[in-house]
Image (cartoon, rainbow, N blue to C red; front, side, top):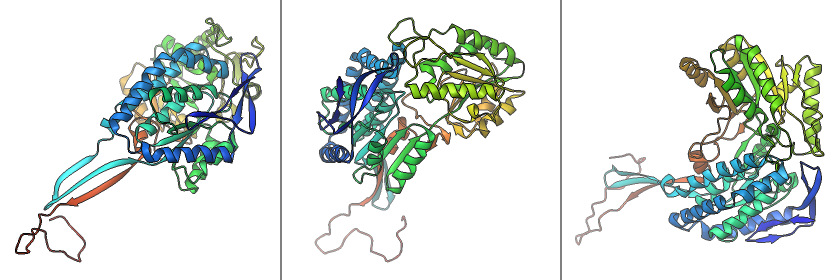
Length: 498
């Protein structure tokens, strides 16, 4: 049985307890992963703290060189990383490769860290006085990430943190542990000193040990809203800087003037890709006015045509859910919605395969009071709501407690501009169904989709992983032979510019 161990201080480290790792396409155990407890958390954080003493003093040029090397290694090992993701998550290989590419883009952003970390300088703010500012790293940073993007989501965090001079402890999901260990090995090959990047495997007990650890300066989290709220509260109480990204209920609004074939194609891919296990998946289609019936017809045709199967099969377009529990939970939402009066247009239950498979499900006539609408399903289920006007659709989105992503399909620039200004959502697509920003922007939602002040990666990520220093300096001329000085006389009054 394959054993996945921690990676601490540049070497594999075992543990006293472990959990099974499964292949979702077969339902069979494929390995076991050690689970970190307080002792392993202390070891990982202590190792990272010692590494911070020297790593924080490494030049920006050297940090950038390591990021360039890591970027090259990620490209060369793209297929290997994708196969590890597919084996433990279940998503199809092309989707897994796309995840690696989008994560690598953040490393590319980190390659230019010297430009991003430039400070500010103001000459002669007062007579003989200059002012300037610069940013410094925080110390040991922790990342706690979900199962659905084992490569991409961690890469949103640790390249920025490390390039800024911090050290990092990553706790991946115990369901998908292997890719993080390979990334740790690639960091070592890139020349990153031992202890700067560490992988601590585990469960909630492990996460709580990191969140409350006195040696951790900042915590980054991505997961469900209830857990994100817990992480934010616990880490804030412990005096840490924290960013906690929560769940989503992403709406795609389709106006009558939209290209309905384009909208149906894009929404289908966004709803059912990765079996709907994406925080940016479209889970609600809002059909406006006369667009409703023809849109539902197109969505149904496309959902029925999706080929469901193992992620390693080149013919597969959608793989399984992550676990048997997830399969039961998502199926339960479909059944509850149907009992509540929604019309099950496409029924994906009973999909073939020994693993945790559920085919695409499409529900029409959904109401906002239904549990399936109110909760994050995180599966291949698309709900259709109907609205009479764009304003009604905007009100519906704004009334939802989540504010992660949304999209509008239209041919009207006026409608698009009104929509993007009016919706209370952090990431917006116009004729784009999954508006995940590029690495040089920042990723994050509003409302119950984000707890904390900053988003991840991009400029906001750099600000999160650093803190500012402001310096006001004077360099008076030395006193002359007669004892006089060019310095202004001292005063007990509060200093002002002169």
